[in-house]
Image (cartoon, rainbow, N blue to C red; front, side, top):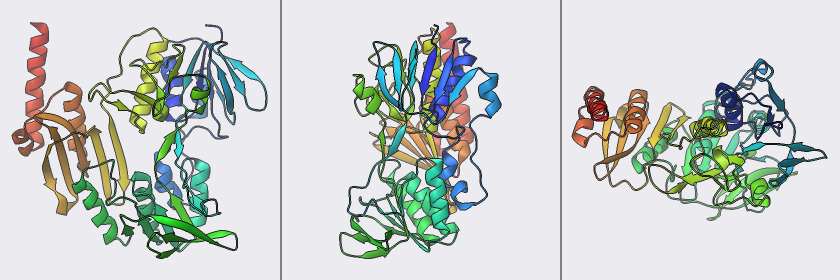
Length: 417
C-alpha cells in the first residue's frame, strides 16, 4: 500500500492506532494528523492536577522520539476539510491533499454547546483541550465564585479540584440527581454528600435561564427560578457530541456517531472509525452504544490496527471507566443499564464500597468507590464470562477469587474435553 494509513485525530485513539499498527508489523507509511499544535497528551489530568497547579505541564501520550523512531509521520496543527472516499484522499484546510490506502477516523467528541443568552460571553468555558484547561487555570486564579453547569464526571471533577483550591463552587444540574446516566443512585447520593461536606453547593432539578455579563465578561448565571448565582467563570459540562461532520459529508453511515462493524470498519470498508466518535452494536448488551472513555478508545485502536493487518477479530473488550472526584476514586466496569437488583460490598460511611449490578442471575457490572481490588477482579470476572451469585459476592474478595478460579478451571476442562 504505497499511500499507507492516514489517521485523523491525535488523541488517545489515534496515537494508540499508530503505535498498534507498528506493533502488528505494518511497515507502510503511517500519517497521524492532529488539529492542535501540541504533542499528543493525556486528557484525564486536565480536569484535576493540571488546572490546580500553575506549574503543571501536559503529560505526553508518547515522547517525541516515539514518532520518529517508529516512522510515524506526525503532523500537528492540520484540519481536514473533506474526505473523498472514492478517490481515497483528504482535502486539507488551506490547500493541499493527502492520499490514503486506509483511513482511520479518530475524531473524538466536543463539548455540547449551551443554548442560552450570554453563552458566548468571555468567561464561559468548556473543557476539551489543553488550551481550554489553560484558560480555566488562568481564570480560576482570578475568580472567587465559579458556577459549573452539569453534574457529570467532568463537572464534578473540576468542582472538587477548584473547591480544594479555595474557590466558592456551585454545581447546577438540570435533572434530579448527579451522574444520572453514569452510576447508580446510591453512588450518586454518596458523591453528592462528600462534595457538599467540603463546601460545594449543588443544585439539582435546576435549569439556567440566562447568563449575565458586566463590562464584557460573564458575571452571573440566573436560574429558572430567578436566583442569581455570581460567577466570574462559568464552566459548561452538559455532555459531548461526536465529531461526525467529515464522515457524514463523505456519505458514511452515521447513527449517534460514525457507524462501525465489529472490526471497526465504516460503511466504506477502507475507512475505519474508533473512539468517542464511533457507534457500534455492543457484544454484551446487544444494544447500540457510543462510549466515551480512554479504555474504549485504545482498545478499538488496537483492533483497528489488527483489522488493517489482515486479522478478523471482533470487538469484545469489557468496558471500564474511572473518575477521580475529590477523595473518591470511582471505577466502573461493565454496562449496568437494564439491571434489576444489586449487592453492596463494603461500607459507605468509610467511603469504600462497591455495587454489584445484576439482571436476573447475570452480573452486568460493578461500580466501586475506593475499592480498586473489586474493580480489577470485576474486569477479570466479566472478561471470563463469570457471574458470581449474590451470596458469593457477600463472601467478599477471597470468596470471589476462589469462585472465579473454580469457574476458569471448569471452562478449561470443558474446552479440552
